[in-house]
Image 1 (cartoon, one colour):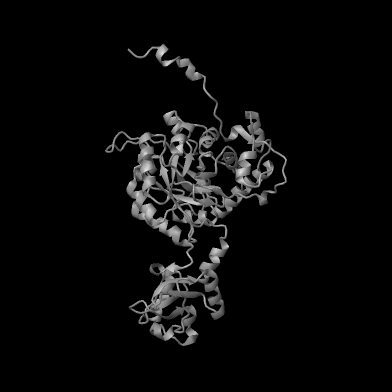
Image 2 (cartoon, one colour):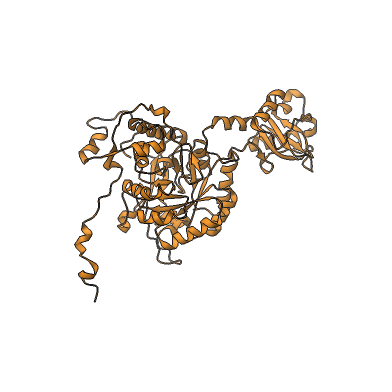
Length: 498
């Protein structure tokens, strides 16, 4: 027979449950302030050793973050987390794509070069195909002989299409050593009226290239998130048992590895994550969790913790499994444990507006992770579709059938390794096309700064200490949205359909 009530306690006691809150249940209490929103400092930490200039990262979802999103997020001061529904070789290529995007010196293997025996026509077609306006000319030993550009092969210069490159190139080439900095390279270009400088070793062998365009691009993104060598930072998702993928991502230069698991308060997951942490140089973020008990175990070794059990817009975990934790309460519980341990907290999921994002910070998060918010941008990999004359982009949860069949099934349950019958915890959907990532981030960060202004906090640490919540009734929730009107022109930071 089973245990009696005296051994297990009364089942009715389970109904004496604590209350848990999410974003719509609370508002920030306005306070005395001298802080103007544009003066608020939103820099923060996403892990023990990685800082961001904005407290925002993009989700590791196959319709949200690949290389282009990673580059865009880092250039804007945040971080992109590459999804793991790709093979290891592709993941490595995407990591390297981000890391090389804003390098001052273009590496030799990425430099488009010409050979002196090629014809002008061949090189002209090659440069057009590769999207460059000039190329170093090197011999068979990779020694730099000159530079050829569009100005060298204009018809009025009497250079024929069949002439050899050596007849058209500029042979008085200006080169620099590996130690040249951005300022030094720029001075060379201005002094000699050139747009590119080949980087050579002591034997005049080509080792890289610095371009005017590259230097100006770096200046354009002065707020970018960069590592100690000036390269853009990027995160990569790995499964809790994917030691090979973790090692490859670490070797490729990923700054943070995100243990990608729907329920990280699984002892096998935590044990494997701990082992991964000891084997890599990158920081390791563990998630997802939603309780203080899970946080107590994770902060023993993790460089960051990610919070969110079922809050995402395309996540069905709570209705499929009956388990979950409303996000504001989940973040607060985890932060109670992680903050004293010096471990940053990432709030993952459920954020529809900039106000939700700053509420997550007030609850104890250091960073917010967004998926659907960015899925409609140009930088997201989802395809554009048109419905009823409006543009949308594909968006799906990593627990959806499509994502699971593409390689993400081990995040969730299926009956066996051989069984193709998944138990999905997400759906496939479409999200409105939004345009550029930078415009979305401008609105999102601006709204978060506005929230800091209402509280009177200049920095995120001060904001987390100073901010207070008030509870909101259902009538108060309705009052907080536009009401009793017909919206004729939607604002860029508000949609009633969110």
